Length: 248
Ligand code: PEP
Image 1: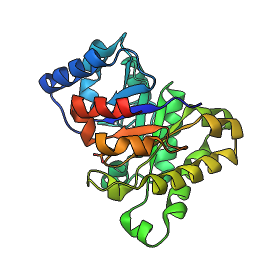
Image 2: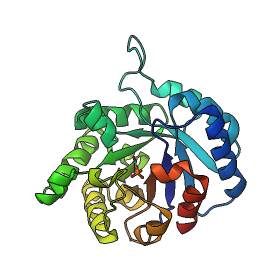
Image 3: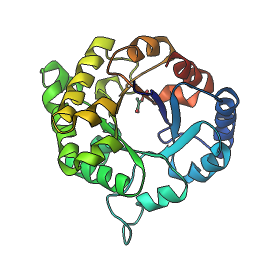
Image 4: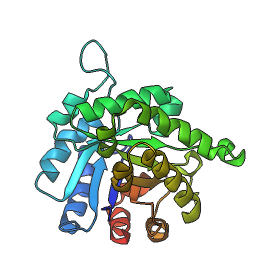
């Protein structure tokens, strides 16, 4: 039985004051949960999260990691730096990074590898555009994205990743994949991993992301291959994020 993971992606939102309110609201309510819970925050706030969340049931992480180990890469943040702040997770390949920063599947694969080498658990995002879905290319696009990652990882490392299926057309739009649409893609992703390592496929957590909210979380999280959620907008309000955690 896979444990569910509910991870918040704060994106480029927050302030020291607003984060303190949000983190206190979460800490007060999350003591023992059946699911794992995490927040992936802007890098400047990792120290704040570490101070606030150390010793709680809530893990924290980053929203990206450099492909490089260290050196002259202005503006980049290395896996070792994230590990210094006791991050558990690093999101890689979010569609906003792919589309606004030109990250290819090869770059995402290298970031995944770098995160693992740094002792972090990468949350590898994959997902198709609306145009791809309407043209019947979902499996081909998402399959190519995950295969690029799987090709770079050895069999043992396949057990060290989390995958997030995030249809681009559902992110921040209020439009959600139906539970069956999401389940179909999750099952396809799991079968791609099973082709390389069946034990890893059984254990890997595959999250759904894309306008998951308190009112649709229950039915999505009830699907056999949906092992949690990557939550954007709804992770910024303690009440909504807590309601999704309860639904899991
Ligand atoms: C995301 O950006 O990862 C996401 C799922 O956002 P939202 O929940 O706001 O659609």
